[in-house]
Image 1 (cartoon, rainbow, N blue to C red):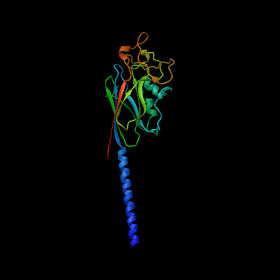
Image 2: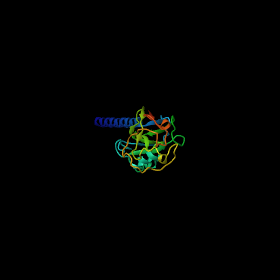
Image 3: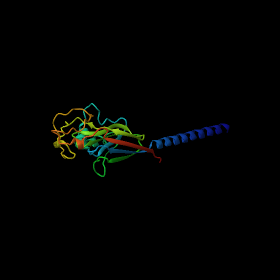
Image 4: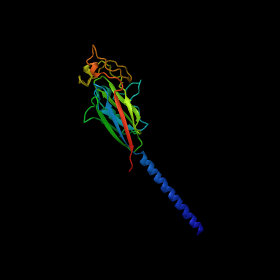
Length: 233
């Protein structure tokens, strides 16, 4: 009888430990769930920004771009023509195991004018708390803002510079610029720089169709704000 009591006591202890372990695991899972609000504000005086391509992913995802290296064809489409279709295909969660979601964020169905803000919201319950994004400065040949593997698990503010995809020469020729005052979507076949680098801005002057006083900028060109809070279920 005494031996039976000891066995029952041990069983009770094991059951209690298992219950506590389950409770702790549940609490940890809840702690990992979060809501994230990401806002991008256009800080330029005369550059409209295209709707933003953004993907939420894990650490195993490829980089959207690399400074000093050639841009992908999909990034070139975004940087030259504000066309996110290639990026959406490459970062489709159905075909990319590292990606949780991919989208194009717009402001009231359109681009982001100077001084305006576009906001994206994420509900993260799978641990993938990184984003990569890109948006074109549309009154340029191939300028864009972007970031790779940006951790959004903590609230903070980041200032963003403009980059050049290096895929179209900075001719400032309206024949190859989609944004105002141009409105053309042709690709300039002239040889370009061939690598991603910090954009030098709009020069204007003789041979340029762009007024530097209206379209040029100084970095930073955008402000990114991250607000994060935990949720319980």
